[in-house]
Image (tube, rainbow, N blue to C red; front, side, top):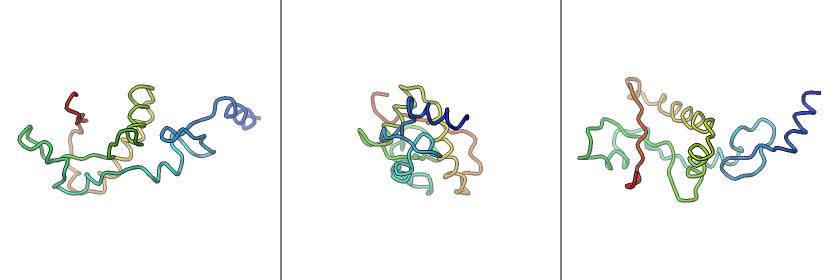
Length: 125
């Protein structure tokens, strides 16, 4: 009976992918499988030298810099950030934080991390 009510609720209030706005199917959460596989990962979390870290040279003392996703206007990362910031979807933050944590845990240099500080990179911020 509960499953039937769940199906009815899904017809009236379907869960939508935060990236492509398509309906999610059973067992999908926040994002569809297609969008999860197309996430624009930056690869700025594995090495010691990267383009992101160079942006901060001479500005602040920094030991390491990383970025989970590459940002493009009207891209997938922007949509996820907008859901987090403007639609108050805290689950997106948990999802992205888990992804970043998983990636960082694979890097042995990250075992001594004490703080992770989000830094907006846009000059107006």
